[in-house]
Length: 206
Ligand SMILES: [Zn+2]
Image (cartoon, rainbow, N blue to C red; front, side, top):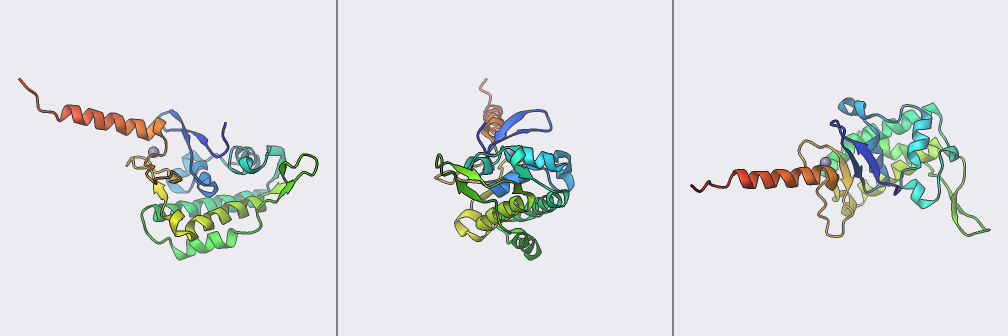
């Protein structure tokens, strides 16, 4: 398991790996407003604590669910930030300016993030625990502001090129040519379709 890469299950039951490319966009893979409600995985604070151990936060320093202390009100604010990012990120992906009120929601959420320390015994990085829900909110919002406020990054926010797929990611590839949420899923699906089209449109020689 690589922190930051999530295993998702499609409506058809296919499991596939998805790297959203940045911490704040990872949050979009946990559910969302409206039609995304059915994908909700952050029902209780314990769900968030468990999920965080699979995010980029766990790449910066080891993180267990027991290190995280989330109150229900904090979870609600994190879900509100996520639902707001579901409006902001697609706007960026389509080259549009996000709604001002939505950007202000992100600004207001960008409080203090979790603190890292270096253990003097082994010089390894550790999180100062407990990592609180408020700090987690701050980490997600700060990452989102970094992406929104950096032209080179916001221009790399993409929606999967499959027109049936709404997954959003930050394209961190060097040439900037990532098109699919996942090669396992939409990449292969479209490769197969292009292959099929090529064969069915060929004139039949009789
Ligand atoms: Zn896709």
